[in-house]
Image (cartoon, rainbow, N blue to C red; front, side):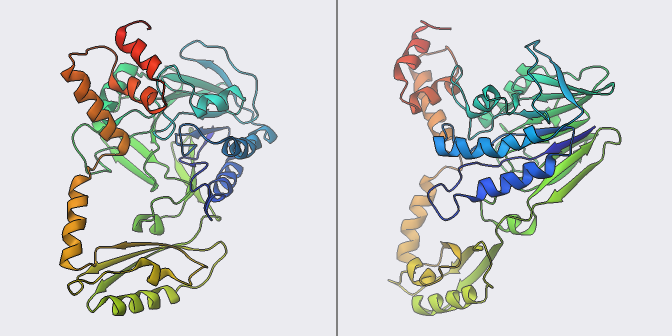
Amino acid sequence: MKIAIASDMHFGYAWGTERQEDSFVQGREAIAKCLDADAIILPGDIFDSRVPKPEVMDKAMRVLRLVHSSHSPAAITGFRSGREVPASMGTPVVAIHGTHERRARGLTNPVQLLEAAGLCVAAHNDAVIISRQGESVAIHGMGGVPEQYAPLALKECSFKPLPGAVNILVLHQSFREYVYEDAAFLSMGDLPDGFDLYINGHVHTGDVKQKDGKTLLHPGSTIITQMIKSESEHPKRVWFYDTATGELSSESLDTPRKLYCLELKATGDAAETVRKARELLEGIRPHNPHPLVKLKVTGSLPPGSFLSTADITRGFDSLVISVDSTAESEHFKKKIEILREAQAKKSIDEIGLSILEKNLEQAGYSGPRAPDLLPLLVEGKEEEARKIISGQTS
């Protein structure tokens, strides 16, 4: 079978800005390139938020409805959990939720809404069996969980390859081999043995890594969100897996904006630095759609100097510019350093999770884990959280 993989489409990203259509344009191209496959895997962060706007849901569903126009000879024939097999949806689409879509247990996430609409099947903590002419592929999935719980969650899922099938495990986490962080993150050594392919969303740069006989595919994202150098060096693409040969291939997308990552070292006063920065921007050839530009300014400025981002970007309406500047006077640098030191490397969610865990521990609480409570509190569902803590609900 030919299995297509398109990850991290982030529908709704940059909503309300010049880039609000990008995720849908790139997502549509990605899905269109997948339609000649026997099945499609979406490894999380299909949406950019836990509760997408209705307008975002509408646009995303119109993109994913493309699968109904295809006629794959493969079909979903069963689940590890034994749940009911859905009606044919054209090309079978198997999805998991990502970190952007994760909600509290018992609350509906956007991927589950897509399943209810007949646009995919959600594979979290399950295995979806797809068959074609006597061949079976089992797609096992675990949606995104807080990083510190990932090793335990993966162990609790007890994933095991199904006999007589090609087995694929789909995750949405950080891996130590890709991200330099603490030991709570997953490593390839944590992956259960015996799977033919491991797929992981979340990391936006496409890559294939092999270790201890395991092949781990990071499909990357279909849209540029991070504006870092690696995103400018690696094209956005969809991937294909041949279950007969075990070969991976990819096809680049044509619609993503061009990304330029520029660097400038400040050696004079602020006005001179602004002049040099504008010269760099003037060297970028116009494109349609407007290119993305990440300008990093380093170095030092004379005492009392302040670098104005507005002065750098003024008049460049044909560019989408982000300026990252550490080139300030020592006075400003000290203030900036204080703010940077106050920032943890963790995401806002992880910071909130750590605070909640500490408070619960101090209160002597030993019930359901904090990841089940935090999303309820974030969404204002304090009564539901209170019931869980008091043991009034399962």
